[in-house]
Image (cartoon, rainbow, N blue to C red):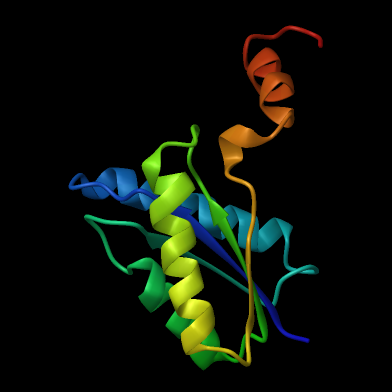
Length: 123
């Protein structure tokens, strides 16, 4: 089965911010190439591709299962409402593709470990 990962960020009017997300996506592609056939990024707003376009691109590439990973730190409206709505609509459009909405980055219990590591502290 061809699996894909779609890293979803908010999007910014500042091109350099969007490029940071794209660069992270490339790093993930190098690290997760055994788990995912395709790894791409998409944006909720203010940048391209949009989430629906990102999903469409992965489907056109042959993805049969897509994990959508929200690259957000908190569960605001975008994480709790907007992204799930977009994913539900895309799942209806591509009923032959499994689309999984993963937990947003900030919701991970690993965030404490990461912040401590950034500060040079042991957990």
